[in-house]
Image: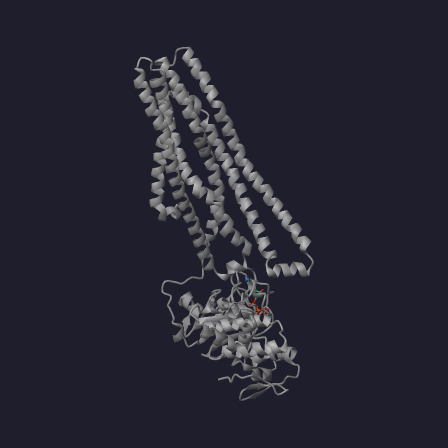
Amino acid sequence: MSTFKPYRGTVTIVGVLILIISAIGLINPLLIKVVFDDVILASDEPTAERLRLLWLVVGAMIAAPIVNGALGLWQTYLNNIVGQSVMRDLRNSLYAHLQNMPLKFFTSTRTGEIQSRLSNDVGGVQGVLTDTASSTLSNVTTVISTVITMAILSWELTVLSLGILPFFLWLSRKVGRVRREISGQTQESLADLTAHMQETLSVSGILLSKSFGRQNYEIGRFRGKNDKLFGLEIRRTMVGRGFFALIQVFFSIMPAFVYLVAGWLFLSGSLAGDPRNVVGTIVAFTTLQSRLFFPLGQLLNVNVEIQSSLALFDRIYEYLDLERDIVDHDGAIELAPEEVTGRIRYGDVWFKYGSPSPYGSSALQPESEDGRLWTIAGVEFEASPGQLVALVGPSGAGKTTLTYLLPRLYDVNRGAATIDGIDVRDIRLESLGEIVGMVTQETYLFNASVRENLSYGNPEATDEDLTRAARAANIWERIQELDDAFDTVVGERGYKMSGGEKQRLAIARVILKNPSILILDEATSALDTHSERLVQSALRKVIQGRTTIAIAHRLSTILAADQILYIDRGRIIERGTHAQLLERDGAYAALYHEQFSDGAVETRCEDGFVLANGEVISERVPD
Ligand code: ATP
C-alpha cells in the first residue's frame, strides 16, 4: 500500500469519480420505473403532463450515460496514471536496490532471472494496478447501491437473487488460491526462459553453442522450457475463465427465476401495492439485476486476479527485501580523492565466501568456527603510496578475492583493510569507488561509443582528456582508424574490438578516472608480441604514481614490483622483491623457473629491467 502513498491525491479523485459514476448509473433504471408508472400506466394524469414528463425523463436518460462516459474516461486516465506511476516506481526502486546489492548476489543469481523480475513481474502487476484496484472500488459501489435499490423495490426478490452469493465467495477463494500458485509457477517458468535466452543468445553464449555445434540441443532445451510455459499459461487462463463462466451462467438464468417468483407472487396477490406499480417494480428490478452481473462477476473474480498478482508482488518484494550487507554505516566518512595518499594496509585479514570452500582440509587453511574453510587466512601487508605490489601464486589461491576486499566488493570477516589508515568500511562507498580503480582480467565494455565507454569513469572528461588518456593507453591511433573515431560503437560487450584493444581501452578508461589506488588483474590470455608490448607500455603509464596491487601474470610487472606476495591457499607464504625471493629459492623461485625460464634473464638497469636480448622491459624505477 505504501507504493500508492505518493498518489493519494489522484487516488482520492478516482474514488470520488467512481462514486459519482455509480450514482449516475442508478438514474436510468429508476427512470424506467418513472416511464412505466408515471407515464405509460398513469392514465388518470393529463396526457400533456405525461408527455412533458416523458421528454424530461428521456432527456435525462440520454444525458446520464453521456456524462458518465466522459467521467469514466477521466477516471480511466487517472487510473492509468496511478497504475503506471506505481509500476515505474517499483521498477526504479528495484533497479536501484539491485545496483546496490553486493557482488555475491550477482555471482549466485542468474542474470536472466533478475531481468525477468524487473520486466516480466513488474509488467505482470500492471493489470491489477491499473484495472483491479479501481474497478473493485467502482464495482463495490455499484453493487452496494444496486442491491440497496433492489431491496427497496422488493426485499423478497433481492434475497432470492442473491441467496447463492456466499457459495460463489467461497468458490472464488478456492480458485484464487489455485491461481496464485499457478501464477507463481508461470513467472518462475518465464524467468527460466528469459535466463535461458539471455545466457544462450549473448555473444559468449552463441559463440559457445556454435563452436560446440550445440544449436539443436539449445533449440530443444528452449522448446522444452517454452512448452512448460505454454501449459502453465493455458492453465492460468482457464482456471479464471472457468470460474467466470459459472458466474455468467448463474446471472443469465437468474432473471427467469425472478419472473417466475414475481409472477407467482403477483398472481397469488401476495405482492403488495398497486398492480400497476408492481409491473414497474419487476421491470426495474430485473434491469437492476442485469446491472449487477458484470460488477458482481468481476468482484468475485477480483479475488482470483489479486491472488495471481500477489504471486508477482511476492517475487518483486523478495528482491526488494533482500538485505544489502555492504552499505555505508552512519558515521562513514567522505574522503576527497585528491587528499588520499594511497597507503594501503591489510591487517590480519580473514575472509570466506558464503558457500563451502573447495579446498580440502589443510594445515595452511584452518577451518573457521562454522566448519567452512577460509579463502583468505590472516593476510598482513602494507603498501606505501605509489608502490606496486604484485600478487603471484597458484590458481585459486585467493589473489582475486584479496583484491576484492579493498573496494568492498566483499567485506572482510576479521581484521581490516585500510586506506591511509582508515578502515575501508568507514569510508563512504561512493568515495571508495572514486579512490580505487580496477582493471579486471576480462574487459567489459558497454555497447556504446568509444567515447561513452571511456568517459564512464569521468563523465566530465573533455575531448583533450580523452585524447591524452587514449594516447597514454596506446589506443589513440587505433581509435583514429575506426569509422567514426571516438563515436564508433564498440558492439555488444566490445566484441568488435580485439582482446588487446579492449585491454588498452580499459586502461584508458581508468586513466581518465585517475584513482589513487589501482587494482590490476592482468589478463592471462596471451597477446601477440606487438599488442602485448602496447598493453605493457600502457600499463607502465597507468601504474605510475598510484599505489597498485597487481595480480601479476607478466614478468615485467613482477620485476617492476616493489614487493611480491606469493599467495597460497589464502596465505602469504613468501614476500620480498624478485631478487630476494629468487635467492630464497622457495615457491616463488619454483614458479618463476616454471613460467618464465625461457632464458630471458633480467638485469636491473637505470630504466628498469633488461632481458637477455637487451630489450628494456620496464621503464619504471622502483622507489
Ligand atoms: P586465479 O589465479 O585462477 O584467478 P585466484 O588466486 O585469483 O585464482 P580467487 O579467484 O581469489 O583465486 O578464488 C579463491 C577461491 O575462492 C577459489 O577456490 C574459488 O573457487 C573460490 N571462489 C571464488 N569466487 C567465489 C564465490 N563467489 N563464491 C564461492 N567461492 C568462490
